[in-house]
Amino acid sequence: MTGQPSASLQVKPGRACRSAVSGLLAFVAAALAAAPLPAQVHEGVASCGGATCHGRQAATGAAVRQNELSTWQDPASPAGAHSRAFRVLLAPESARMARRLALGAAEEAPMCLSCHSDYVPAARRGARFRLEDGVGCEACHGGSGARPGGAPGWLASHAAVGNSHAANVAAGLFPATDLIARANMCLDCHFGSIRPGQFVTHRIMAAGHPRLTFELDLFTALQAHHDEDADYRARKPAHGALKAWAVGQALASARQLRLFAQRGTDGALPEFSFFDCRTCHRTFTDQRGLKPLSRAGQWRPLPAGFPAFADENLILLDAAARVLAAAEAGEVRQRSAAFHRAFAESRPAAEAAALALAESAERVARRVAGARLEPGAALRIVAAITEPQHLQRVSEYQGGAQTLMAVETLVSAAVSSGLVSEARARGLRPALDEAHALLKDANRWDEEAFARAMIRLGAAARTML
Image (cartoon, rainbow, N blue to C red; front, side, top):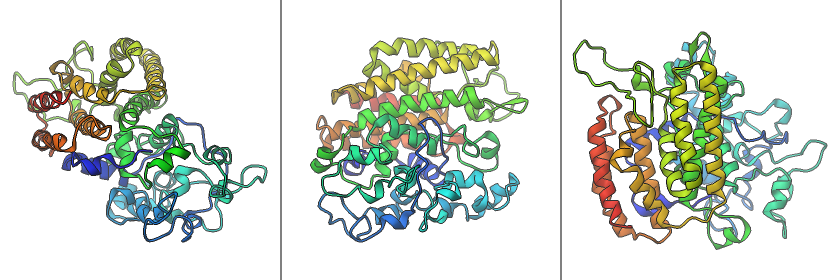
């Protein structure tokens, strides 16, 4: 996992992006793609909280901070959002959502607990396990207790002298240092799942649940409970922010496409959560000359009248692939166009095209995860996503927010790598603030003004190349 690049750079997410991320972290929505975790016993957060383990009040450990529990429990910062996930279900808004969905009490509903707690079967809960702990340690690191057949889990041995990370993984610790495994795990909690109760449908959003989005490097930084220092790198593989961002965009795209193929209908209707909200939710008027919110083009060849797929991750994947995975970039673009065209053909055609595009996105993720990336690639991607031709695709508010978060993440990656000084990065703040101001209100989204602001931001970033 990365350290905390954004925190030290002062090139931080602005108010619109921070509020979106906070809402998403508060309404953690869980589980798909990676193989299921081993059916190990989950011993509970208290099993990690001893003063000689992760429960110290200050970061005084020699190898790890050993105050990870207090970081996870932070009552105010994003780093404590997982610990607050269950308490969100006790809020009045959650009670209203549950009533609208006829779920009963939100804090007792499997549909909610699957996303807001470490919701394992009762037979896998140890003596100190509590659902009220929210998204606890083992929700991300895997059950630490006994394994199937009675073999001891990783809790008993993970801090032993001479033990290795590989040995801990073999004992059931989740391999979070593997970027692809980590991304799929995080997507399970922030994008959706085919498993029961773990997919945020349009009906759930209509009841009040926030729309979901994902950025692996940003979410990793917000949840970082450790330092990626020399000691860490001696024990575990380390990855930079650029690689985490690109792998996250690729796998978020693949996840969305696979879910579309598996969960793309709701009764007789399409599952509308896969589409750009504003292609349907717009002001009704008979005014002539009104510009359509969803437009056809080379990237999105949709017939008139068709709602647009929510393709903000795909748009960024295209830019990332052009810079980091040239061999796959052409295929991504061709299959993206084929996917959009398939909406006018048939549901089976759209599903087949979605799965083909998902395979391409996954190939990009594997290529990037295994590559040695040059620091300058981060700024080249910034240049790519701020080109006028690229910005023509960003026709929806959510795409604008995702684009701006990407710029901030990539500039932070350039600073972390030493390519750009913090002072020069802070020089982008006025341009970033201008773009953030255009994202304060989704109902006042101005696509053309946002494009102009991003072009100016890109021009400033290009001087750093």
